[in-house]
Structure formats: structure tokens, C-alpha cells
Length: 313
Image (cartoon, rainbow, N blue to C red; front, side, top):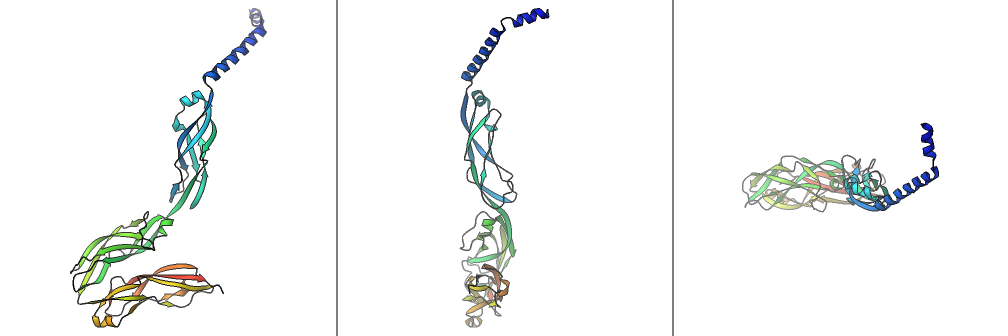
């Protein structure tokens, strides 16, 4: 039995092998004609992985185009959602970076290219600072009435946001409208973050965002606008020299008896020790006003900026 089968297989063996090869070639030809290798592209959103915590992240582009090569049948069966463009941000800190994009695709596809090849990202660390609140009056109180005292619910508030924005904040301000009031009153004021030029800084969070203000009014007091005089004491450390010194506000309105105010042309700040400034740059601090007896002011605190420069001699 086995002999007959062996003889059957070996009969015309060469012809059978040739027929098999021809069949395979014909099959490959037909498959290539019916399912050729083609190229195509997919537009996919860029995915950022391992974004560091406590950072604000911005990116230059949101999507990328992946060019791939594969059999036509693969394109028919593939889902666009199975193609991805990924940028890994592992180990990055504050700054600007061009992160390489990596393509992820289903089996059976070959990557031709990805555009763009990189995505520009900027990382900005989220920080917070405590800042004093400045209360600014608008309008005028009633006739023969002046502001004797302003009490605010909180002396300091917290500002939080990207470091580049938080560091721009020079003051947190609340506005109160006197509106012709003749009696003491309370009001709820919203707080605003302002830069050194007095422009609003958006993108930072203030906590609390508003506070209660109590305004005490007084009668029979005269008013006068006087200059604020910054008082500096001591000397700077070796190698440093004093630059510009500015105070905000430069002029303030004080109240008191007419006789007392007649003698006043300026109000001194508390002494600022120059020995405390040990590095170059502009240093901004809060300083109390030294008010003479019988003189009141709405806000007894001013902002003092001292510029320290390197000595060139």
C-alpha cells in the first residue's frame, strides 16, 4: 500500500513541483493586484504623557499627520483611533522645549513620516504668594465728612497661578466707592491683581476673591494732600550702590484739624535698613507711615521700591 502511494507521488514529480511554483506565483500576483501596498495618512491629536504635576502646560500644535505604508486591506480594516502621536515629557521642568513625537500604529503598517516631527511645549510651575491688600477709595464722602479709618476683613490674601503670572503681580487692590456717604458703612469689595503699571493680571487666582470693608467717617476734619518721604537708614553691603528709590503712592490725602495740617508738608515712612538689601535688583517692600498725632490717613502703608546696583569702581 505504502509503495503504491510513494509511486503515485513520485510519478511526474518535476511537473508537479513546477505546477506548484506556478500556482504560488499566480496567487501572489493576484493578491498583489487585488490588495496592493499603498500609502496613506491619518490626522491624530497629539497626546502628551508624563506631564509634571503642579505645572501649567501650553503646546504649539494640537494635532499631527502620520504618513504610513501598508496593504490596502489594512487601511480598510484599521480604525483611525488606533493611530497615535505621543510626546513624552518625563523629567522636564519650567522652560520651553521641542519634544519629539513618536507614532503608534496597528500591526501591518510601516511609518513613512510624521509631521510635525516635534511639538513645542512650555511649562510654567504653579506657585503661590501671600500679598497685602490695598484699599483704594473712589468718589467723595458727603459734605464736611472725611474718611477717618478703614478696616478690612483680611490684611493678606493668597495669589496662586503660573510663576510667570504670579511674579508679575505688584499689588492686590480692592476699590470702595464713597458715594457721598455721610455715615459709617460696610461694603463687600472684589479684589484685583495688578502689575507694576496698574494693569490687571489675568490667569491668577485670589483667595479670598472678595472681602468686607468697614469705613468710619468723621466730621469737622480738614484734608490735605502731602508727599510721602521715604526714610533710608544705614549703608548697603560692600560692592553695592543705591539706585532709584520710589514710593507708591507718592502723595496721600491726610485728615486732621486745620491747625495741625497747616504745619505738615510731607509724611515720613518708617526707617528702611539698607543693610537688608544684599543683592542687585529692584526690591519692593511695604513700609508704615509715621503719622503725627491727630493726623489720620485711609491706608497707613505704602509700597517702597529700592534699586540696588553693583558698584563699578
